[in-house]
Image 1 (tube, rainbow, N blue to C red):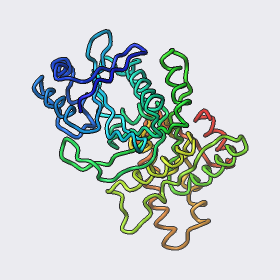
Image 2: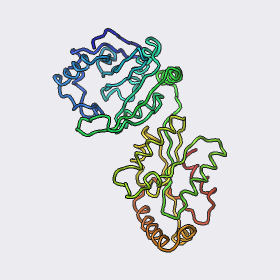
Image 3: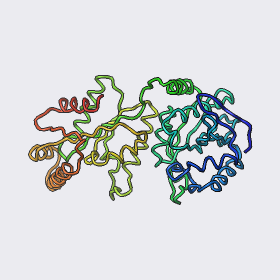
Image 4: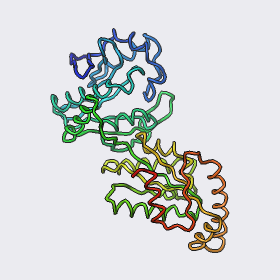
Length: 361
């Protein structure tokens, strides 16, 4: 789609993308820059010319070159523009690594959403991100876009695999707040960190993970601190056990998106081995969360006594065996940065207070 729309301000200029921009784009596009796209990484000026020509022949797409001081540093687009229905998407965005983390992306989003909401009067601006693209997810979340859901098997990645897409959006009545946050960032003012803060509580069976999580919940409720508690063990509690399919992480991602949409930013997550899987769980949460990992510990005698309150006979023996094995594995494999919190001869409320303090809540 050929267009003549030019947007300028906040130190950037969005000019209609043209074949003449291909050579400048080719100077910085590589696999790292192209990550998350659905097509193979274009190589050289010829490859970028093909990308530009494809953009220009796509209906309902306004493609732009991003310029700073006259230099091409990236590209972005409106696409699936339907002004009759009052909706569009922003995407096909990539920048030179040297401008990552600078004013460029917020400035571009400020210009694009101002055009969409204030000039065209749309009701909704959407962002679609591949579920594996943690950097883009973090950038969209930082804008203040609300998570909406996951479209399973929605896209074919450049490597040929089918991948999920995550949808985020900003609605017209949310735009003033998003605009204010963008203006604050562009002015260099501090903006409240909206990332998720995750408290992982792990430990052997019988150590009291669920009991401590419940006490953490009670403490935070008393302090009127918004939060959500998720018992990881029930996210893939099924037979046959679906561990190898990553069901727990996928379910966590779905559950947490719904809590995020309601405004929650603190997550308490319990699971025996959660402290060993912090990276995977952080990826499932999806916005570069701040993670505090706590490994609850207990002596063999304490664990056995607690297990004996709920298990009997063969079930008790099996749980003891698994608990003993997990204790050794967790202590050996948990990183030094994982906080060890002893639970022997301590009340749940006392342990909860220590755990919440470690999380800085």
